[in-house]
Length: 269
Image (tube, rainbow, N blue to C red; front, side, top):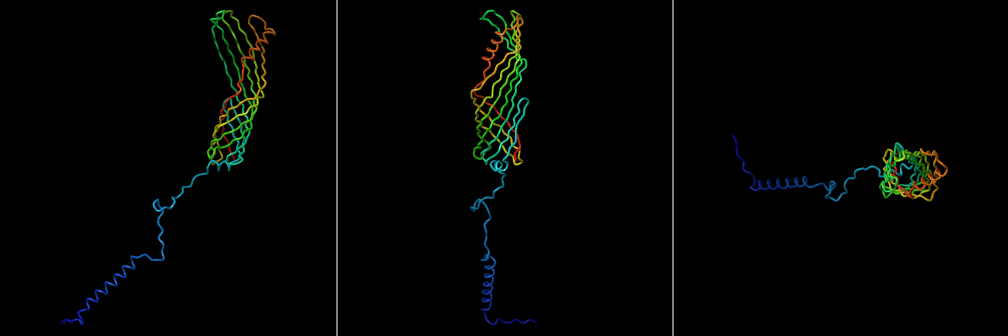
């Protein structure tokens, strides 16, 4: 049999509720407030003023030129070849030597003309084979522009030139012809040049580029000769030989300036 016991005081339930409320509020405050001994660092980002992460990049052209100071290069085509050595003094200045050979061969060069105003009215023609050859060398100084692979240069050099030809001249009216062998040489021709170029250095040591050079020549000596002079209708005399040499001398003129393009590939170390 159950019996109901009456509480000792009517304020006991109210005191119990207040005590539970105070204890629960203290526990909530301790769990939500951060501890004072920890520092919260913001995450990097564009909004909090922290610098962005830098991506690693390869060495620049000046750094590679400083690393690979010695250069050996050149280029070769069917009739052109060159050789070049250079030394970087720092990341922007270089000095070096260049040597080159350039030849040109023309076979069966044929010209035909008709004389209408001057008698006799006749067809004239020329058939020739000739070969030209340049060879020389120069000392140069290069200056790279800022941190780029472009540069300007100054050249001081000496060059030789030679031309040999065999020419066959004919006319149809008298059915006559003339055969002669000519030779023209010039040099040594001293010159000064100004160049603009591009050279790209790779991290493996390989480099490649080009350079255009304008050259101006100092006065030089020319030499002309005519040999093996034959006429179909008569025997060549000393006067014929001197006249043909004079005509050849006035027909062959080298310019006082020239432009050349150099291509090069090489190895630096």
